[in-house]
Length: 78
Image (cartoon, rainbow, N blue to C red; front, side, top):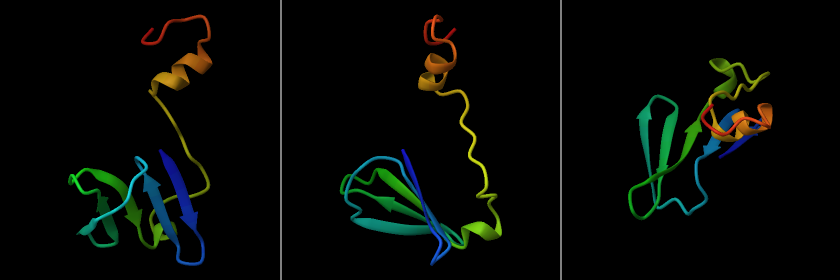
């Protein structure tokens, strides 16, 4: 997953998986989902992001890779 912020347009894009968007749908004001050719969501566009998201921090929790890094000796899921 990749987060991209575009300051010139104040848009935050969350790329869930790599792919080509073949369709987009605004599901709420300023929230656009991008779909691939199989109707899977591949990205989320958040317009005017800084007006309602604190862009100064990013927290990650409960991801398997985070557990692996933080608990090097513990098996995943511990």
